[in-house]
Structures are given as structure tokens and as C-alpha cells.
Amino acid sequence: MSVTPLPTLPIDQLRQRSSTKWRRYPDDVIPLFVAETDFVPAPAITTVLARAVELGDTGYTPPDPGLATAYAGFARRRFGWTVDPARIRTTCDVMMGVVEILRHVTSPGDRVVVTPPVYPPFFDCVPEAGAVVERVPLVDTGDAWELDLRAIETAFRGGARAILLCNPHNPTGTVHSRETLAELAAIAERHGAVVVSDEIHAPLALPGATFTPFLDASPAAARVGYTLASASKAFNLAGLKCALMVTADDATTAVVRGLPDEVEWRTGLFGALAAVAAFSPESDAWLDAQLAALDENRRLLAELLAEHVRGARYRIPAAGFLAWVDLSDLGWGDNPAVKVLRDAKVALHLGPLFGSEGKGHVRINFGCSPELLRESLARIGSLVTS
Image (cartoon, rainbow, N blue to C red):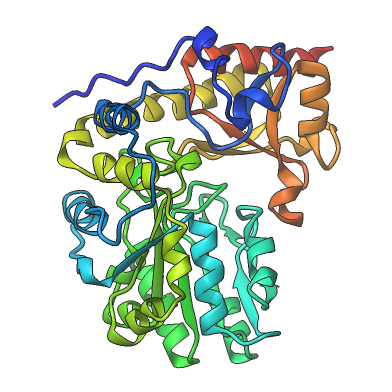
């Protein structure tokens, strides 16, 4: 059955937004950097938030806003994953949950593996938790990016106590296979390490890709893993501050239940209300429409790069609305987004922030209208021939 792609808001309405994406730069800049999307909001979310404002329902988040049950239903429908709602707690956002869990599963000075190029806050949240980053870069096979399982095992053998996994991976859009995740779990269990899996982009696996929740990859994964999830990326709710911490084993559940009550109190009420609406069956059609739009845009981006930015290297992502593009051959330096912003008035995310592997790269947000994508790439292309 075909799905009608989701429309984006008109540019004049988008420029009325007060979020980072639309206020960071002047109006002559097209913003394709931070991970906010431009799509018309899901109706169920708009309705519940409007009603909350009408009622003055702006207080503290209750202990059970219905989010655990809503997420369990979503996971069953979308991923075929059975989640026990009793093993879910909420917090403010995914990175806050990562920090709190790492604080309780590592000791000061312990090493935590990260797999660059990777979401820049990973490099900050590990030391915030008192641990030390150990870099184990992804392997580029020529066709895909993959976890370097052999190097990860070497890190665990050498004393690393945890890995902070990005699943699906940001910025490459990699969807790790069930087999890879199961092997990672086995490696971690052999060495007494844990896996903390950031699955914020999980609802955005695109056609042709199958997302595997880490905790569902194998029995070992259930024993060694902690998952952080949120509706924030798939439904553009980052400012509402709500994330979930999910476990699948008595020992890991005890760790999350033992976190201070304040960790849960930080959950935003609007975030919880919106997430319940997002994870409800009522929003499934909206999400499917967004995935159809993103599927078209990721392919359109490949065409536009080939037309306007010859020399750019781009591998179509399997998940999300973020494209990892190598501009090294254009001679625009280690941080080409600087030139693109200055000379083309298009704001892209800075590649080197994702680790040294990001030199010469940019990250492009294609969660926008095709028209905005075309204009942006035409602007960038003008730098190639000028």
C-alpha cells in the first residue's frame, strides 16, 4: 500500500519558530545542521499539547503518565520487541540518561568505548559521568560502516568497562544487524562489560532496513544492556525533554530503579504527554508518511550531490534524516562546513565535531522540503565552479 509523503511547513512559518535551527543564523542562511525536522506535526501531538495549555496542565510529571505502556505498545508494533513496562523509567533526555547510567556502572577513571564518527555529545557525556573515552572508530568496508568488533574486544580485554552504542548510528545512518549486536553482547559479557545503547533514531529506520533493538538481539544482550529511547527525533520533540531508560534483566533493572528520584522528576510533562501521543497507534500513519518523505529526500540528495557537487562522496543512510557527506576532494579544508556557511549561506553540521574521522566531512539534515534541499545544494554547487 502506498503512503502519501508528509508535507513540510512553508518556509515563512518555519522562520517563525524560536528553536535553535531557525534562530541560530540570519534569515539569509538555510539551516540544515541541527537535528530538527520541518514536517507538519503529528495531529495527535498537537491535540494533546493544545489541550494541556488550555487546561493550564503545566505542572510536574506524574509517576505514571502512561508512557511506559505506550512505548511497550510502540515497540511491539514497530520492532516486534516485547518490552516489560515495569522495566522502564523516564528522564529528561537521552544524554542525561546515558550519564546517569554510566555513573552507576563505571567507576571514576574507567574507560568507555565510543565509535567515531559519532554524535558529538558522546565525547562529553562520558567524562561527565567520571569515565574516560576510548575511541574505537567504525570500519568503512567500502560499502558500509560497521562496528570494529575485534578492536572493541581488545578494548574490553584491556579494561574498558562499557561501550556507548549509537543504534542506529549518527551520523552515518547505519542500522546495525542483529548478528552484529548479538556478537557485541557476547563480547561484552565475556569481559564483564556493559552496553549502553542510544536508540533515539530507532523509529526512523527507512525502507529496506530492519532495526534491531539491542536488548532484543540475544539473551546476552538482555543481560548486559541498557537502552535509551525517545520520541524526540522521530516526532521533533527535543525541546519537550522526555526520554526512557529501558532494561530487560533483573540486575540491570535494579541499577535503573536505584537511580535517584530526581533523575525521573526531570522528565518534562509536555514531553511525556507528547510522547504518549507519538507512541500511540494513532500516530503510526503520520510516522509512515514521514518515512516515505525521508526515503525520497535521501535519494534526492544523492542526485543533487551528483549534479551540483561533483567530488562529494555520500552513502545513502539506512535510517534517520541525517546525511554524512565527504567533501575532502573539493579542497575546502578539514572543516568544509565553515566555507559552505560563509560563501553559500547554508548551515551544515561541522564534520570534525564527530571525531577526527570527520575531517573533510559535513552532516546534512534532509528532514526538510525537497525545494529547500534543491536550493541548498544549488548554493553549495555554486562554490564548486566559482
